[in-house]
Length: 158
Image (cartoon, rainbow, N blue to C red; front, side, top):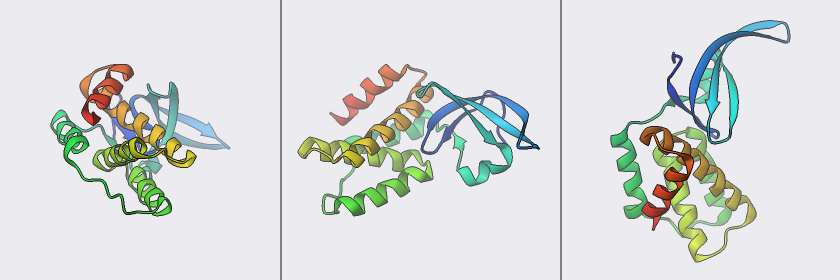
């Protein structure tokens, strides 16, 4: 169970901080919720505590893990043999896991492909969302702003 003040990652949404644990009545039923502030999207998310396992919420990674993940932007390989449909399906599955490395691979691969040839609208949107999710965790781990995290990512991608 998470505590108030924990930095967490909510897959498909990004990183945030648990600001409170509150009991709310919705549709006549009382449940306890994590109240999570998501800095990148400027919103607050309520997650029912009893649904946390299914949602794959996890603690933000540590600096050592982040450095390893940042290295994949320079050294990892991108599979260019996949069709757009196959790539989209694989990338969606990777993002749903909430795993920082898999999310970074999606960002890396789509950024590389976009440099060679313009992405279609669905992949452009996926790249934008995946970047925001990754940048949100990067910012929290490093204690930097969204703009600083974006600049750091751009430098690593080259």
